[in-house]
Amino acid sequence: MQMALTLTDLTAPHDFERLVLAEDISVGLRAMICLHSTVLGPAAGGCRMWPYTDDAAAIHDVTRLARGMTYKNAMADLGLGGGKAVIIGDARTDKTPELMQAFGRAVQTLAGSYWTAEDVGISTTDMAHAAQETRFAVGLSGASGDPSPWTAEGVFRCLKVGARHVFGTDDLRERRVLVQGLGHVGLSLAEKLAAAGARLIVTDIHQATVQDAVGRLGAAVCAPETVFDQQMDIFVPCALGGVLTQQAAGLLTARLVCGAANNQLAGDPVAETMAAREITYMPDYVVNAGGIISVASEIHGRPDAWRLERLSAIADRVDQMLRRARDSGRLTSQVADEMVRAMLTGRRAA
Ligand code: NAD
Image (cartoon, rainbow, N blue to C red; front, side):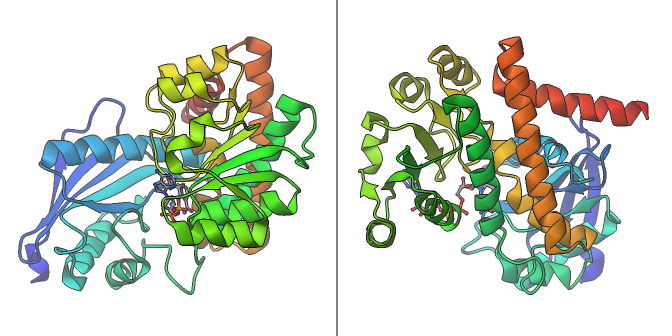
């Protein structure tokens, strides 16, 4: 059975180190593993399971996500490069322990150049199955644990740095803060914001979570479709990607955007629209790195103190990014990307 696994190197796009097709037809595994960069360390990034229509769609997603991990891991200074894996299939119907074990064998074959963890469609139980076959699987229960509280803490710290730049103070008392999405990260963040005295407005498509926040945190509520009609000082997107469209950016009353959701911008020009309206956007991959910091502590075998120290380092880097953007008149997203490229070039030169 184990002999059925094959790894085939595909032509990686320009600027990518490696793209591998891992296949084991005996268990229905067809996965793409992409190493965007190992310049700063072994590539690390989650494994996603999704019913892609074809290989091209899977390659498009895995390469985009792998590059994103290089940027996120670099900005968080984790000694890790960027990579990602996608398994082609429906996580509800096609996933079996045998499939995950075969995926684990594929990861093991890459000999530590790629570390995997959970992403969309993959649970801690699935990762435990993969970990039976590889020592390069992390995010296991009983190890670094749920990364969400770390993500929330990282976003909270960055939001305070952003508030200092935009409002001249990081005192959040009476600041109107809208949290979109009260899931694992959003709720934890809402609790921190409430404790800091912010006037919370919350929204979620699940009413039970919203009612909990209203009762416990004294939050006001808005309907999900009215987010951009609300008066607010800070917008905290913690639900889906792509929420910041051109139209939303034109309506937004906030002066600061800082949230956990991945890929918040529906397109690059949205960052320009926000800047033109004097809205400071904190790039998502910079501020939401708390989760990968937690995972990295498991990879490197580091204690809690290391996680906290890395979280403080992101906040310092965000401060630097905001200063440079202000001094040069460039977008925060451009400055953040430049900071990462400088780190990669510096390391290559060294
Ligand atoms: P989650 O699934 O636990 O929570 C998402 C919440 O958003 C849910 O409560 C859902 O009902 C709500 N939601 C969905 N659509 C909505 C809409 N249109 N309007 C309002 N609410 C809506 O996810 P999470 O783990 O809290 O992650 C939130 C975001 O942060 C995601 O984009 C995720 O990719 C990103 N992120 C999470 C982590 C982490 O550690 N969990 C790390 C980095 C980035």
